Amino acid sequence: MLARYVKIHDAIKMVAAVEDLLPRPSIHRQVVQLVNKPEALDSVCVKLQSEERTLADVRLLFDAVMAKYPATSHHLSASARIVHSPAFESAVVKLLSD
Image 1 (tube, rainbow, N blue to C red):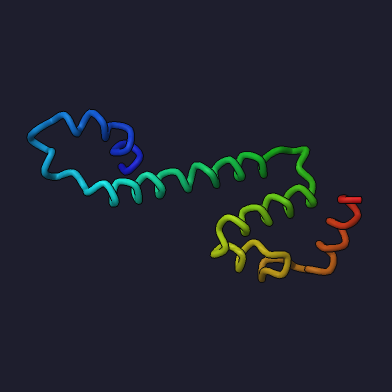
Image 2: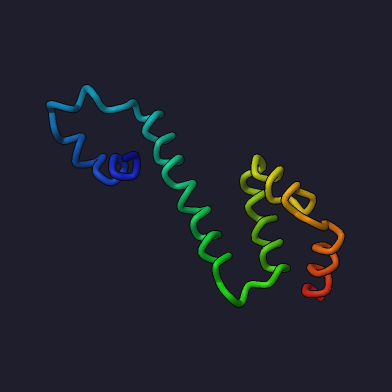
C-alpha cells in the first residue's frame, strides 16, 4: 500500500478532493525511506540465492547488511544463535577468503 502511495504521490497532489488528506512533507519522506529499505534488502536476498555463492561471500553480504542496519547484527553475526559452530564457520570463511 505504501509503495503504491509513493508511486502515485505526484498525481494525488493534483486532486483537490484529497489534497487535505495528504501527509506532511516530512512524513512523506519517512514513507519513501520505509518503502526503499526492503528494496535494498531484497537485492541481498537475490544474491544469497545464487548457486555460486560461497560461505565467504555470504559472510561479506551479512557484514555489509549489519553495517547498514545495525539492528540485524544479533541475527546475522558470526556468533549468532543460529550458527551451529562459530569456530567452524570462521575457519571455512578464512580458507575460502585466502
